[in-house]
Image 1: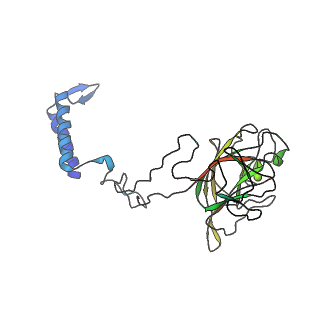
Image 2: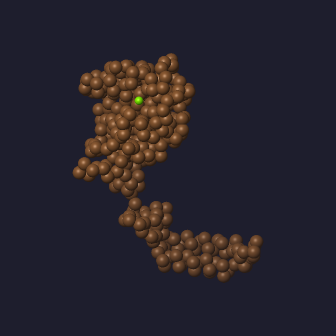
Image 3: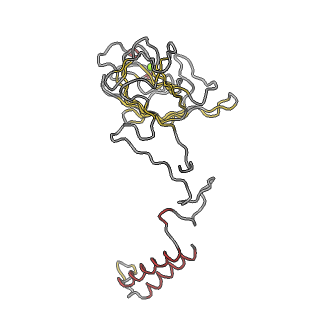
Amino acid sequence: MQTCDTLLGMNFHAARGRSEKRRVDGRWRLSRSASRLFLATAFLTGILCGQNHDLGYEDTPILPGLPYRVHDPKRPHPPVVSPAKDPGGAPSDAIVLFNGKDLSEWHTTKDDGGAGNSPWKVGDGYFEVVPKAGNLATNKKFGNFQLHIEWASPTQITGTSQERGNSGVFLMGKFEIQVLDSYHNPTYADGQAGSIYGQWPPLANAVRPTGEWNSYDIVFEAPRFAGGKLLEPAYITLFLNGILLHNRKAAMGPTLHRELAHYEALPAEDSLVLQDHGNRVRYRNVWIRRLSSYDLPEK
Ligand code: MG
């Protein structure tokens, strides 16, 4: 390849030698005929040397700590994922947790009723907390994931502070992202909508007016343990209605009320849980993607 690059350089100088040496704007420029000569010889050199950089380069530096070069043609290509037709919709590789019709992906945790035995109400394209029915948990378990979920507090305002439109998205069933009607509803900062409950207030209060639909987009990294000892805490990234509320924020531990959170060994994966806090909060358009890794072999 080095030889080919040298040949290309020689082509340029040969072309320049035949140029009429025009000086434009203080710089030497090739004449039109010399430019044509250069392009033609460059094309032939490319063919002879087999150079095609469409798919990468084999003469570039090795990336630190990786088996690949910069622009390495041998580096695996990521899988193709088709986005949804509409923004917020489930992409082609998502696990759809609510299809708008039934709760077959969920079960209640109050009486361990099992899959498909949920007493939460299913309406037209949404499902709703039934007070005292218990929390709702996914049948599948998830560790590292991207989650999209939409929620709406009851249109009719009742209660104040934590008693108004309260529910919650418990990541791995342990880390609560608060769901609350925080529209003109004073409460403690680490308990308002989008807080990592009891630990970190959201970076902004971006809720829509009472009763309107809100969207959470969450990236969750499960905590890691070795021999019961914490290696890495859980990390949470959260957008509410497209506005960043947490940027890979470390959780102090599973959610507690009026106590300091702390870690004890947890499984690598667990159910996603929605909270029954006694308020008729609605959910819709729930989908999840397990997080992928870089440079996986191509399928
Ligand atoms: Mg809650």
